[in-house]
Image 1 (tube, rainbow, N blue to C red):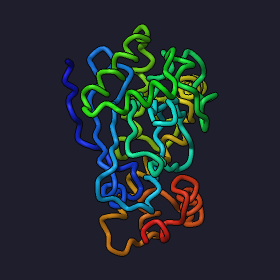
Image 2 (cartoon, rainbow, N blue to C red; image 1 turned 180 degrees about the vertical axis):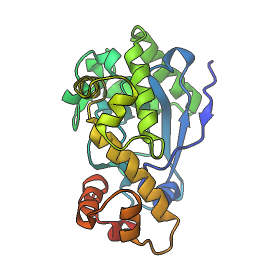
Image 3 (tube, rainbow, N blue to C red; image 1 turned 90 degrees about the vertical axis):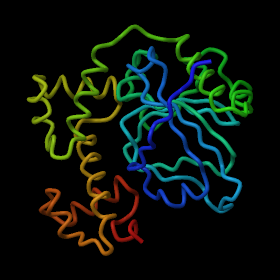
Image 4 (cartoon, rainbow, N blue to C red; image 1 turned 60 degrees about the horizontal axis):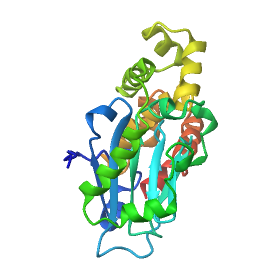
Length: 267
């Protein structure tokens, strides 16, 4: 059996990591080599024996990706969303799936990913016979490696041809997420020798969200990381440090992405 290498867990998008970790054990794994051009990682989340029965799920600052979920009630692809979202775990002791790379789902689906933004797609629309019965059987397996092998085999059976645009888009996302790497759509387009119109077209077709939103999300990951390092964050100073000249603009963007005001989030 293939041994899937466990990855260090990336938690920056989890808005309240403490309560989540107390109730759930989330593990991420590298995909097989054939799927690495398309899939960022596989994941399995198991509820701990001692958990908070009132805990609903983890609030996430969404990433510009499509995610495949297997839950006891069914299997589905979830498109990107432009606000925070809650991964509801309360109804189940386990869920698993695959997080695609930015643009990595498009070669499987071959439709504009912006049509999937804020929506779900039944898994059997892309992966034949992957219904609720399949998901329950998959999750009933006690060993993580068996679950991962089945997910990997499913995606390998639908493996698309290599797509150089996915590689390009991941280079663009990496540039945007590098602190200070990009401050505007025009700067990104210039860096990669693309017209702004073509850049926006590629993002809508392959990723499902706009370039401007991706830049704003990357900046807010840095804002949240910076704020967590302070006992009492000075939001006026933080807003100025990250390029906001208007405090109300900063607060509105924060609410749009995180779902609550900076002060409420830190509490």
